[in-house]
Length: 534
Image (cartoon, rainbow, N blue to C red; front, side, top):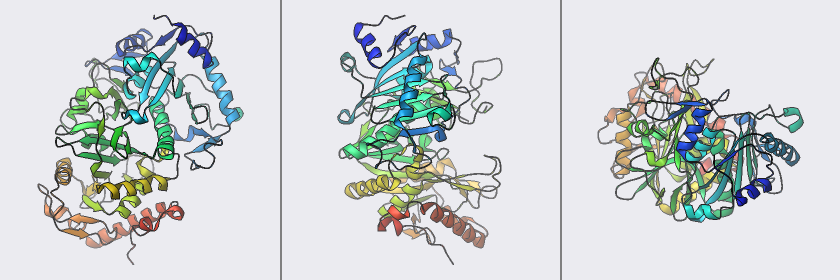
């Protein structure tokens, strides 16, 4: 075990910690893996990745996320059932309790940074109860240079104790677990949950408040890559739409898979790693991600094939949300530093299980802002109890749980930047064609890849387009290596009247969802709403 120097001891006591058993500061991934195994908290897979279990929480708990309501946040945060307020006194009580919890226990401390562009860099100190939580922070945040660590003074502190819970009634919470943000103290607290995503999404929420408010940077929940000729592309999409799969392109350089900022100078990654879903992961479908699952990676809630240490990625015995985190350099064609120019192409990915939206459409700035606000995809029958037909799922800005400001603030920033930099924005349906789920078929991945490749190469700039009669979006009549007859979704349905009824049904769902934004939306956004056919 390493011994602390005087500065580290002073730093911990200044933070309010005392009486700890052992402190493990800035340990290497190898050391943290060893600690995890030694404590009986994980085992190695046949590829060398550490495999752990996150406990009763295998995903985020958005209903237990709170932001301290104070002078900083009072008039800026969009308070709702996602951005829930908590009193400062309650936060102070929980902070005191979680720090006291570490008395007599081991602590793992890591200094890291976020934002690949040094002009926007924020220093983060992460204190965790578990070694693998600390390794996760080392994977996902940017690893500072030796020079940066010499005189490290954190801007934000994250404290994570999965086994610490509180009395909800006494502390203004829903239940004993919590994920709390305090912008005045610049502190995030995670308790009662071992799900590692709470750590990274807490800091993402911080950046989503600070960067647009104080620095003029648009924070985005998207993946990004860069072509051999230097062109940058962004991929937005909710879970299951193909965001990570389509951005991990062997012919392009990966900037990042989840969180980015768009400044006056271009795109930069917030993170230093990737956190990918790995259900049904195969080398054939996602070779870059599959090969990244090696020593240094953390696999969450997976199962092995019986009698082996080989991961069965089809096994969802614990959760469908099986995950793997790894440092970005595990991807062979990853860019470091993770920065790019202004995006020439932006893709909104949606899995439309209604079979209504075209496989690819080009959006006007107003339409782009509208669809950005909607953040649409669909859940299909069988994925959740009680769902017997496709059900629309909307998440503003493709990341509502992490956006403290009103969604129109982010949408208008996007529209402004699109106009300034002449970015092409595309709506790409990776879902169904020829009918809704259960009748039609899933659009083949090779066709989706061909459409995105054509857009990136500029091959869709001069072709003829058709305007969708309900949604008003324009889709190309020809795309190289894609059958012409599938580009107009109505043509793929044998029953045209059934298509019209389904399109009307989906447009109603869009407009109903949009009602909550309409009072703060500008005219350009309002005019982009789909027209319901009579």
